[in-house]
Image (cartoon, rainbow over all chains, first blue to last red; front, side):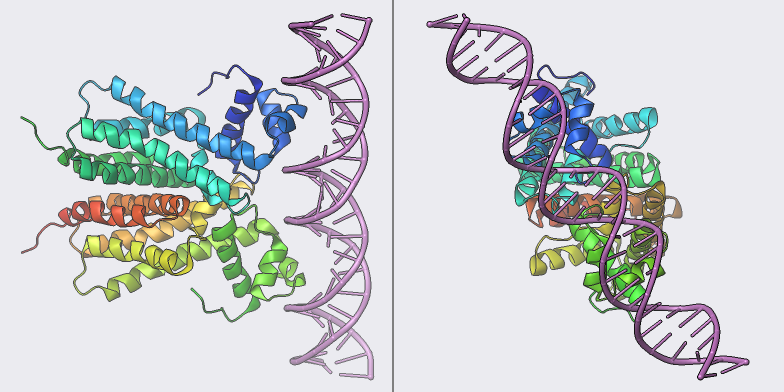
Length: 198
Length: 198
DNA sequence: GGCCGGCTATGACCGCTGTCATAGTAGCGA
DNA sequence: TCGCTACTATGACAGCGGTCATAGCCGGCC
């Protein structure tokens, strides 16, 4: 999350996601993005000729792909994969960040969804696509753990919903309590969905 | 949610909440609030001498009190009160609105939390207070249904987290599916927390 | 009447934003 | 050297935001 992408274009998309998730879409200026990325201001209209909306949409898409890839890494880090373990790992990413760096940041996809009125309707579609890109690997992981296919997608939706809401409440309260509560209370429900193959 | 308060001040707070939950904090202008409330522009600086931050904070506080009061009404509308029934009623408020009026609006408290950087830190505190005002009656209702006091607060947090996240995803996807999924999957867990008094 | 405080009305100010226009530079193939 | 393309640099512009200043209305009250 901290390494800077190679090209200046990637850096700007990355920086946009960083600033959006901290300040919101409306409060994030194009000049700020360029400055944060260490990129020249003139490159903005070169790489993103459709303006802010394009930049925001790409940032949201990047965030969705990033979240999706993280799922695979979480799975690889679990000794014995369980739904509750995966959910705990997803939440731990946020508790770790909040305890280490404070509660400044949220989810960029959530920020884009809330501020979608400021942008065109394409940003809302980008957010929906980002959620889908995130949900798919989660559902796939659940099926791989023995959750019936019919329920896997529903549980993946539930996991992401609860996580997003807990992130929101944690930011508001400046306390990771909603996140740890979600993990503790939702874990048994998730594990109970695994059909024993023994 | 549609009746207009008596005084112009109340109407402006109400209108601010309405516009914030639809467009976000940053995209909601003071002039828009006055126009939406049918109030003179000059009244803004009269009733809210501390400017936009005060208006936003009061709108967030109003939303929190509104959500808290709704809990009591939901309880009164349930034949036999169960945790899952309460959660379903809370979610139904949103599915009904979305199916009737479209996915334009979200939760104003969530919008304020995401855009808290645009305002001062007091807005974040107002959002935290709003969540607390919302969570308390939910937890109280759960204890009244037989949920142990120790778990009631955790489950109330979980309910609000999941609901907020589902609202977010539903708006992004323009589909109530996340909301109905949350109700269906979380209901059994909530009811299982009731200790049988028989 | 004369006064005053609550409220309204309106215009100006300044800062900021996204966007455009224009010009400049670096690298590179011919 | 030329020309071309990719990229950078900078300034201007129009619009909108919140906020302040000033002035007007209007009811009650001595």
